[in-house]
Image (cartoon, rainbow, N blue to C red; front, top):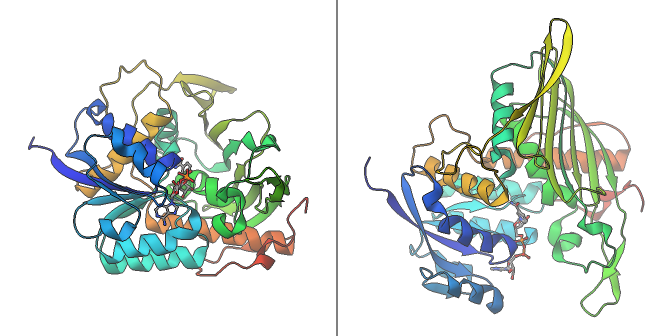
Length: 393
Ligand SMILES: NC(=O)c1ccc[n+]([C@@H]2O[C@H](COP(=O)([O-])OP(=O)(O)OC[C@H]3O[C@@H](n4cnc5c(N)ncnc54)[C@H](O)[C@@H]3O)[C@@H](O)[C@H]2O)c1
């Protein structure tokens, strides 16, 4: 095997997710083999304290508050993890400069932003993917393979969920993700929606119709001085869709207030010949259903530690969130190097746009209190009137 290709990576947005990249690059040697050797060389954040955190990473040479400083060829790849209202401007700048990037979801605040990013990516000829790491859990990978092999038979129904509950604490201070101007009218779907859309879209299950129940539970939260300020985003979203051929019910749940769930990504698909279920709450196992001797059996299979890209981690050990991020980055850089083969790849720009189509239909459904068709490739700008009909307002 030839020597791994050195890839210089820069981060734009050194917050919660930007910092995770430092850990991912630091653990690169856990991969059995990789065609690349990533090196974190640059960081950009408007907040100096956030930038300074990266002093602990010895390879970082460039510290800047302006992302345009990183577009002069000094990095090969950018990881962009900024608030949603900035995705359109930053991603299109990066694409226009011809720099490859892994952009955080949801790829823009609304379908118009996602469409502008997709156009810039095409015109810039860059290799861009959208972040979505949860399907890289070994149990999820095994469930995806089970479905791709057609083991479930004709699909009866499918459900994908991403459930949080830290918002149960009404004293939790406001942040940009809870303000429509920064997070978008799609609210929780912008935060968690790509995570639940990635696998169904990869399986070719593009929803055709959507009936959505959008819910607002906490209208105000403490502001910077402790006084209440509006918390005006949708907290929970349940989307009941029809997808696939022959069509079946596919539901997508994204919740910031799902009492008892801290950070649970789960999927459950049943078919006429079998079924499969996985939850990150129980990462060691994947459950598979079959009919044996006329008896319906749900069996628990041990998922192990191995995901899409082999690692040196012992197969009996447990897999966790940082491992999923390592897998996602390995998939991104391996695909960029042309060596992904048939392994599971990161969410594509087309999949990010298709997810926006579904979130857009959810807003229209909620406003109409009816099921609506999904408009594929929509480039709509969202308006405040789009969130009419939210339950609890
Ligand atoms: N994949 C995941 O599991 C996951 C989890 C959380 C968040 N995210 C996504 O990551 C992105 C960032 O979220 P976060 O939780 O890291 O937010 P964050 O608020 O922790 O960090 C965002 C950072 O961006 C910086 N920033 C703001 N404007 C900037 C600009 N013009 N240029 C450079 N930096 C700027 C902020 O100062 C902040 O440090 C969002 O798209 C979010 O949806 C993904």
